[in-house]
Amino acid sequence: MRILLIGKDGQIGWELQKELAGLGELTATGKNELDLCDPARIRQTVREIKPGLIINAAAYTAVDKAEEEPDLAMAVNGTAPGILAEAAKKIGSAMIHYSTDYVFDGKIPSGAYQEEDKPNPLSVYGQTKLAGEQAIVKQRNPYIILRTSGVYGSRGKNFMRTILNLADEGKDLRIVNDQVSSPTWCGAIAKATRRIILSLVDPSEGQISENMNKVSGIYHLSCKGETSWYGFAKAILDYSKEAQPAKMIPIPSSEYPTPAKRPARSVLANTKIARDLGIEMPLWEEALKQCLGKDPSH
Image 1 (cartoon, rainbow, N blue to C red):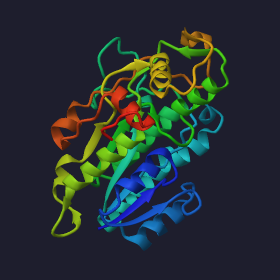
Image 2 (cartoon, rainbow, N blue to C red):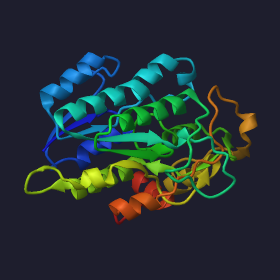
Image 3 (cartoon, rainbow, N blue to C red):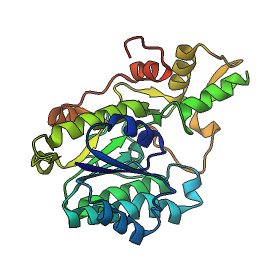
């Protein structure tokens, strides 16, 4: 089976390159190989490679900067996924795409968002990611959209690396304590994606099986449990043992204004993906230990 991975240099894409090894003939593209703002190039790439599966791990993820660059964010997050889905449909291939908890407004007082809950994004980033979901669904071609949350890893720009870098400076850390989600290690996302693919491939044919049509849809994929950004930062420093700031201070969002509004509570329920695809994600604390290399079992 030919697999086209888009966004190879991002956090999820980097991990996917390792996890997809051995599953088929992999072609991985980054910004240098495929400009997602060029619809003609997207279509040409899909026609030339003729993948049985397209995995789109590329995204415009600068949440605050998206408020200043809405057209660019929409081109990458909203328009390109729809073009990919259209191109996939023409050659009879399936698609896996990653979305975000930021499609929700976070106004639920407790519990977790289900896939059927109505999206209401607060930011340009969330709006463009929702547009991408809708563009894929509109094509009525086999797809799996994986909404995830608080993605981090050992490379790239993310919250975990920011906290470790700031702690190295020995300064006080003021961290928001009233935004709650489920931090999710990109390595866990990639491992889950591999399991999903293995469950949908017909080994004798090396192609996506008919099961893809049955399970096609939107799924939530985040680590189990929940915490605030303050709780996440505290765990990062506790588990890493490498650097400690002078002091950690929990603050409300009102004391740390940002250009883009964030949902106050964006915990995602993983019941559907466990039921339909047999995917169980680790607790966020355990995934964090694995990412930091502090879990001897991995």
